[in-house]
Amino acid sequence: MHSPLGRIRQMHRRLLIKPRSKVDLAAFDPSDTRHLGGKQEAQAQLLRDAEAIDLLQDRLYAEGKRALLVILQGMDTSGKDGAVRAVFGRTGPLGISVTSFKAPSAEELAHDFLWRAHRACPQRGTIGIFNRSQYEDVLIGRVRMLAPPDIIEHRYNQINAFEDMISSSTRIVKFMLHISKDVQRDRLQERLDLSHKHWKFDPSDIEERKLWDDYMNAYETMLSRCSTKIAPWYIIPSNKKWARNATIAAIVRATLEDMDPQYPKPEWDPASFTIR
Amino acid sequence: MHSPLGRIRQMHRRLLIKPRSKVDLAAFDPSDTRHLGGKQEAQAQLLRDAEAIDLLQDRLYAEGKRALLVILQGMDTSGKDGAVRAVFGRTGPLGISVTSFKAPSAEELAHDFLWRAHRACPQRGTIGIFNRSQYEDVLIGRVRMLAPPDIIEHRYNQINAFEDMISSSTRIVKFMLHISKDVQRDRLQERLDLSHKHWKFDPSDIEERKLWDDYMNAYETMLSRCSTKIAPWYIIPSNKKWARNATIAAIVRATLEDMDPQYPKPEWDPASFTIR
Image: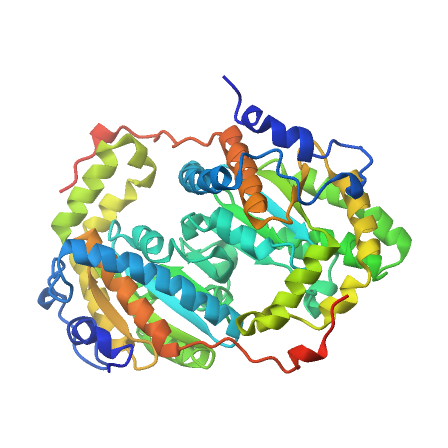
């Protein structure tokens, strides 16, 4: 009998970043699917996992003691929005909240960089999804030099301390959606070619793409320094959408099963009440 | 060819509260299903409507100009949580937010009664669901005399003015989930009888139930005074869960179709970009 996390041992072995390990993204094939069965099998399993996540979320909500925070990071077109829909599209909306982190507002900039992340943390009983996150401040923040290098350098430890603090009530799991530069080109081109996808294209995406190598370096540093036992990073091969979705769903499900939320026992005796 | 709202003309005729009309809840049968086909047909239609709401929400999100606010009110066990799951359980989580209004916090009490509702209003491009709402302040607020009568009396107009103000960017639709006192007894009893439902039972529910008639009066006043052209109230017969869900889904879908959100046209020429 495997533990819930043991069942996805293959994924752990290949995709989980061990604390304090040096990450070389070139060693991770973004088209890798060896941790999965074939496409059909993975798609069928995804549906089962999405249903299971819904049931587990119901128990988490009833229990009301702990939260789950799912962090998604990745380059433009890596499929963060699509993953949210595929993995959590069957979860009841009551116990889930998605926060999409955009360029910070004037009010957010007037606070420390973790302020807006902290405000968005899920309350006990719910699943919170960060679509981008505090890690933007060591990704675009580093690549675009939005703060002095020593400030950026300090942020990795600050994020680790922050995540350690919220972990008293919140389980954390972090996914880096890993795609190749070629796949990004194809997907950006598709946004130009299909009129119902035009709204997803932002001309500035092309400027960010020119800094691809700088971004990969920033991701490697982030993965090396911020994958911890209480808040692990997984690298999700995301060139194939079906593999991306199936992998994330499997890990989220196993994480929730490992949390094993329980319907609470009442402090009162059900037989003591009469309803007239 | 019917307009989107014309297609649910039966529901409008029976369930929509006309502005400034005197409401007598006794005239609304909570078991009424005449506005629907049979149970099987309604359940099949619910699934189609839930899928359609998902597609419409995607267009609303892409358009990014308007929001939809769905307000749910009803006595304990009237099925607010169940309706959220049935109607919005197929909607992608990115563009939806649910706010469950509980007893106000000390910080909320330190502000005017609309402050917390305003903070929770959905941003453009999204659907916001209020599971309970500002109307608590003229329901439990009135029944439990949580404020002086003249203050409560003033709130109806204040709510109307508030809803008029947010309607510049937000479409509003309001549902009162109408059940009979007998059905509430059965559902409360079920929460005592089934151990996995114990967590939903609160001993204070029995105290509120004793004030049933006072609550019905408060609902009637609310419906009479706060159903407006820009923010209409519908009375949803909710003794039968399938009818409740099917009715709400049909009205939400028709409302979104009436809004008719569009994928935006870009301000740039797709052919002007080359992605390398």
